[in-house]
Length: 442
Image (cartoon, rainbow, N blue to C red; front, side, top):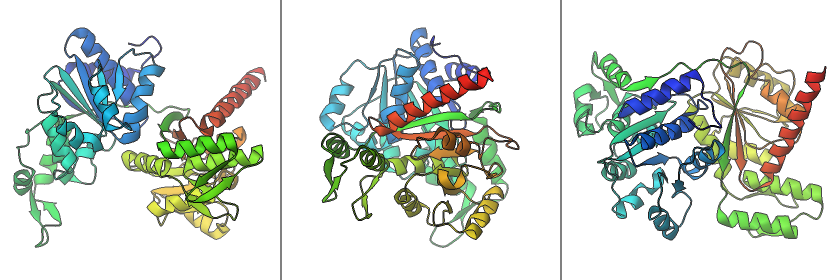
């Protein structure tokens, strides 16, 4: 194991299982350390001589950032390369390098097939968020099946094994246990399901089949009991902004003026510049008239992935109204606790949240940093953009991490790499350390 990292008992148990079994679907909630444990398993298997290398399939931002940073942060020492976010020429150069772990985002599956890439029997393949392969009809699944056909070991990682229903089981199982349920999804479906409508758009299980399918699926999954932690568990979700956006961001930072969507954005004062840079990092910048200019969807897409992959109710913290509007493009019925929300609307939203009826709710630190009890409705909070205020940061997190909360609280921080987000995070970290020192003196 890396000298910088000490696993919890449940992670040690998972590591032993991944190193022992050739095919496994590991079910663990977001924040349980799946990527770190998986990297350690790859390192162990290489050192043991069982494999030479591994291919890891993951969502774009995870393939682009998470595993690479985990390897560096914890000192695993693996040669991790990524194809995500690179040009075709750069990808070819990466593939020709001496990599031990190759990160590939799912969208690149057809391209990898075009390159005639084939994983050998001394290659392990890991599917981060294996539910991305639930559709039997998708082109990416077919490309992955072809390129990974001879892989010697297979691991599927997910926190939401049920996905959207039992029809999704086949794609997940087939990715990790090829052909164990037959070579054809349609033959398998015909054996266990019947069409409800004449067009075959809706299917339901044949009598007695639901339990049989569940038991077979469950027997192929591995799950460890994750303990409840009294302190919130931070989960860092870095994203990489598009190259064009970063060029504009850097121009504004240096010259105090840049063009977005055909409109010049100026920031002649340091305070204004900081606000504009924060807005650009989040995806929407306001012009002089206060009109929103859409810049990118990188952060909002990352937030959506967290919500969908967790399969849990989530609170999303925003700083600017334009961010809330962007979120509502995805979730039109999402309640918002912020400026412009009446007391009646806020009360109704909070009550519905605590009854578990609200899958996504947004809140602004100024409107929800004190006094609200939200611990009954969920345990995941996502900072889409950070605040400089240590008090607001701590108090917002305490809406979920408070007395009465029965589960581990996970705090997700979505930050844009090489932007002002890092400065804010560093500032908060320093304030937290100072506060901890003070508390120890009292």
